[in-house]
Length: 77
Image: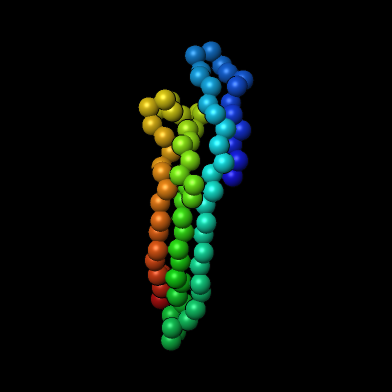
């Protein structure tokens, strides 16, 4: 996802740089007996980009989350 830099500002706003946020999501679906199962993995912010949400009141104090990994298995019954 690409976010453009914000340069058209309202009074009291500050500019924010653009950034490219890359996420990877993978899943494998299978059945175990009568159960529907999913094994999944995802990586958020793959390149550990420093990003700020322009509309946030806290953008000058905090960033969006850094890189994160998730692995799991999910079953429906």
